[in-house]
Image (cartoon, rainbow, N blue to C red; front, side):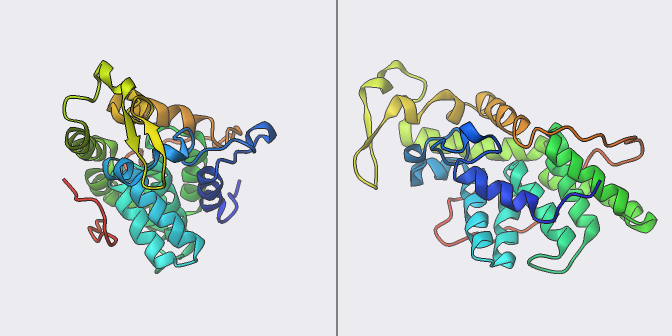
Length: 251
């Protein structure tokens, strides 16, 4: 089965505007899935670099500045952002934003499939089938390096270090306390945000945040694809530290 070109990029755009494949969800008002739009302030993005860089990549993608989009998605990929890793796989595979490299396309897609999300796994299997024997050997040689740079074992702690730093900086002893419900955070767009909602555990406690990601991406593109025998395909899957203007400080 061949996966249509551009489906991941389209999925990211639809997801960011709150649309999903189901009709009743089409009117859902949210950005980046279940994170409310008013919660996603500059301060929120300072603590969530996966979303900060994914948003920058999506903006560049929308403007068809694919070279910039690739750069921003790579930064998001360093912070365990599976959608960005999947979009990178698609971009490398199709030669969007730079030289086509099908091996890197497969490796980024394999990385995106690391948690077993069905849509990304289907793309990974489709890419593997299309690789030549030499390309497969290259992929096997490079997958451990990719894991060392972008795999969850290193990327999740990298993300969590930033989250904890920003949580301490912005809340002190407030985070996790019962006094948050009486506070309101001023929004740069005007008005206020209830602190208890802003600092909800699913956004600021790593275990709950990753669980939320799993729930959301597990139900995204839920169609079942039979992919056949996976034996011999690398299950484990280079580094760009450039940052956009006014980017949050890295740990």
